[in-house]
Image 1: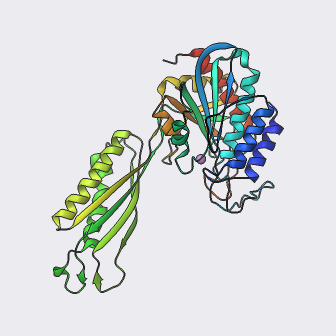
Image 2: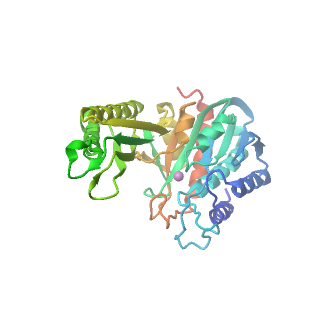
Image 3: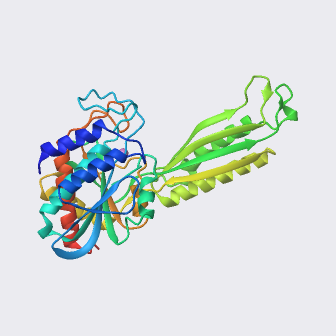
Length: 377
Ligand code: NI
């Protein structure tokens, strides 16, 4: 593995970040580098993003590796020499690292074709940051014929050479809600002639806090956050309406569903008891990243076989659209240690480029092992 070349690729991507579904130059670069390496491109008619394949000399199933490739609307303050040249756009989540690592894995797999019992499809996916890219590529048929999928997110908190592995829920479901509480407005000095939506919505916000503490298991990890509460525009008028918005994060589908149901029941019930109405709207955004237990052992073995350290991954309440793939086929998502000083989406986000060869080697080794051991369970 030519680490210097991977570093150069990664820096070029970092200098030219692009927002979700606008990764045109990124796609061009990745496609050119894949072609240069003699790696087969498979055309799924993607507007942005690219799919490649490496086939082994032995027959076997088709599995996929996935990297996301988009950047964020953030002004870069990392101070690196290869800082973003696209004003207000930055690879602040390390997707440049993911794309480059999977390109490295593709090259390694090509060199190891005689060890491969099947085919590895490498998906360079657009638009992860807006949670739409995975769904888009699935609809374009990219998962057709694929038996399992593997991916990663860089983890600044873990040292280089350490890989976080865990079965089951790794990243939370993400949902958004809106709530309108409608009462009757009027004079603030004569509240008995009104139905005050502020008082009612306040009761609803307080009662939402009982869902996690009273309806879900103490072992459940769910977050209910009301993040917007707007009502009224002056001091002496009771408004007609309060508008609320917020998010729910969960690590189990059943908790996710129950939380939404309880919120609706509380909002409608409390509003009705005061003679007001509640219009509760739920917008499903991302499912849980839920790792198939069948691949946990091989995910650890692959790390340890080539001298890296596998540790128990700590789940994270951010979302990841890798979850959409796992709704269709089994998949496994890991943390890749990159030893960075800042968390994801920080304007000074940086990572250790030594992790590029770790990630490339790890995913090549993982793909070889998964295919050799197929079926996993
Ligand atoms: Ni990310």
